[in-house]
Length: 109
Image (cartoon, rainbow, N blue to C red):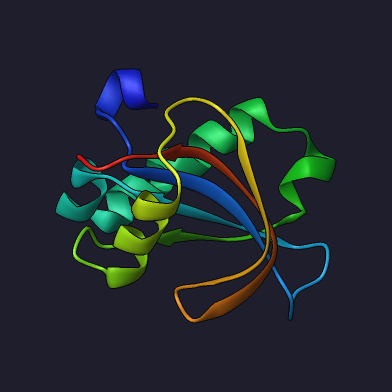
């Protein structure tokens, strides 16, 4: 997706304390902010192409995060990674208690 649309400043999976076995996909990118509805459709279409049905049902939602969100800055400060996999456990981001998270991309753009 990033090669087609542009880089992400955040692409991460969060498992919230209050939603066991359901993951949130958090995304942030300049191109997402320009047209959230169109971007969410684009991302969900790509997820449907590459994930198996049993993987898809474990996704609770896709959450676009605005670039000026203070929580995004906190994540960037904690972890810098691009197209990798950083793991976080038992933390609080965006006011959500996170049991487990995988950050694929976390970088300032």
